[in-house]
Length: 369
Image (cartoon, rainbow, N blue to C red; front, side):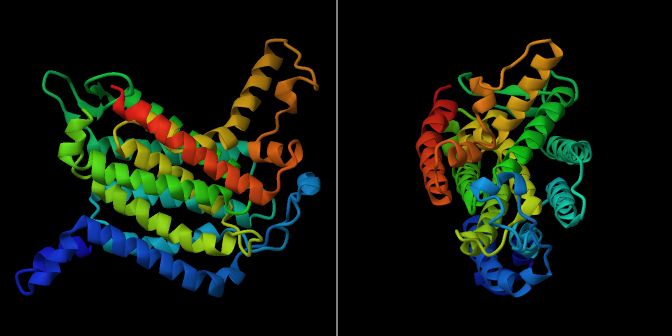
């Protein structure tokens, strides 16, 4: 909003042109979102539902969250919303994506508030609807007419291959929807240790903002890396940093021992935003480099579940003492129960692993083409 208002006001007072600077909008929006969240959250978290703890994880400290306010992601994302509206210069299809992100958050919050947790089928179908909607909005908002090809095509770049790929709707939308669905659920499954999912995701959002603003959104750098330049990528850099700032304010109170939990409302929103911003770079595979620990930690459980069910249908019997049975997911549960790590050790070691792995994967997926 400020971006468009400044164009009208600059002729009357020159300094208003500063609000046409994406760097200023990004920095001011991030700071304001963090400040508002840190100030408002403790004043209103008493209205949130209370966590019931996880009795099945009692021996791993699963009941330690019992009685704490949960669903804080609802408040944090609502605090971020007017800041996004104020500082991010969005167009119609970008607004549609943001609305879909908030529907994903709302479904998570309603599940948090429900006395009877929603079933896997219900949550999975709602997640699929939201994911398909975002994938459709991304395609409609950013696909182009390519000379010599029929219909709209999304311009994508992939690892290890020089040049661009022009992907049609029937391929792009299902692939993008699967990525959105998987990352959302992997992030949600990773939310089991104070500060873990939030911290890892905030790091990812910051790196994503740098890629969107400095690499994909800046023509000389994009040409150097032989990737398409998206001049509008800076919008999603601003959104990513505003949300990172808002959840940074939340993490101030979520540090162990936490006072408040973000619940499904926060983790699903973060997962959706990370996947959406990754798709906005034009490389659907970039999420593998930007969020490796979250995907392995939370997504590994989905892979194990599919493997066990497929093996059962095929008539294979996987014994209880097999390595696949002994490996717990989310992986942070395995580290706590089988390796004896504390919550603080899980958090710090997972952060260090992500910081070590991310640069290597980014070089492989971006530079080697």
